Length: 192
Image (tube, rainbow, N blue to C red; front, side, top):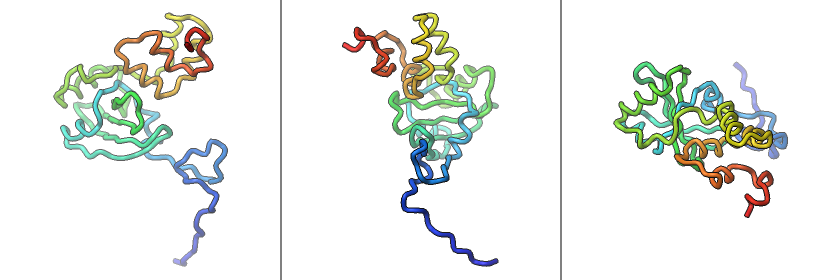
């Protein structure tokens, strides 16, 4: 086998883990294993606690990863016939850990209940149930309550963080909903 010398990176290339957004010079973009797999996962809820207590209870090892939002802690495991992932982004403004099924299942509530039972926690730590990414339910809620095309378009453009914050709320008020809408889309009355 011959030794081939590969040159180092070009000085103007950004790290490959930073999304290029069409401005970067690096021809490569690196994904994490989490970023590659998680779009296939089914979010079934959010828990108001970090990943580490779940990992400690089940004697799991917390892994570090990243995706387009931030760095995160994650554990992947099987429990009572369900394949779970529990993740928490470092910069998650809602402060919740997301519970995922790595293999989608029709009875997501049964899976979340099984996890809660085994970790010895009750409903009090559940921030929300369901998938915050499900824009069809978000759109139908927005359409039913407010009914305008502008509101539907705003829901489609809502960031992932805003949807997590909205899903984690126990009560929704018009003022708290306005915080998730970009400023330029608020009416003059809502801005004051």
